[in-house]
Length: 333
Image (cartoon, rainbow, N blue to C red; front, side, top):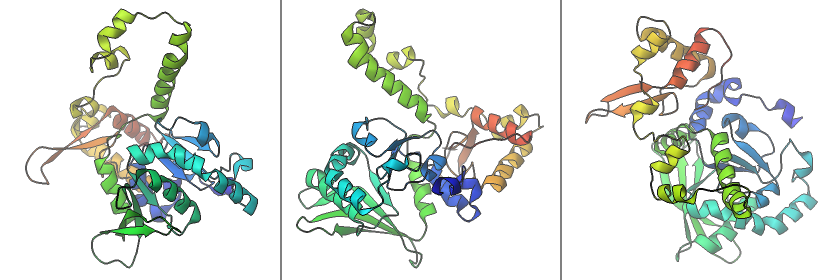
């Protein structure tokens, strides 16, 4: 039943929260950890792979683009943690989960949405993590809890809150806000993974792992070590060998002005392309120009905040062609 009522496209099916979901989608997090059973996160973060239940314990958490369902998934009902016996087993194994998740807590900022620290599951994991990564004052510095408070007046307020435990004294940072959309926009503006294909990154990482751990040591392939020795210390040579081009220049990833986009679509200028962008916003609640993403990038060209030049990509041209022709399209920020 839960699987049946979960929409395939959360953003387009929920008019009340379109902007909030679109802002969340633009973040492109390294990974999502959830206790929810449904596939909402996979709907929002296109291309992310679901890792369910005990699969987390056997999975390489250095990969990018996963949704970890640590309490199971509707796609595999046997994995769902729902009754007392299920939770008793989960609590006995929680230290294994905490040890596995330590990679993220040690190397990435972790932001908690939608959970209270009174939640036993969250508290248990944070206690185990805190015992390893907390500083001498008990602060787990790279963990922040976002607390939605619709009664809050004015700007967001950052504080610290204690984790209620029996003996240890750990704290995390907290951000009280009356707009999660603003929080999502701020995170999207700061992240580096603006135009990444999660499936491609995972495939590349998995192949590299198999190559170094299995194929080369076992002698299954012939290796030209002289060639490899010449490129491993060259930051530019190895990506080129793999067919990867550095995209530090926005003109490479987003080479077009809106006028050029319009011309590519058969219009005399920018106005036709602008109308299609507005059409997509009206149909899906997604403002392609609200953040830097795979379709659009705002480039600073002067000292004033308003001094920006908007650039657009081939991905936008392809998307607008489908919108122009009335064909089905999907948006992947």
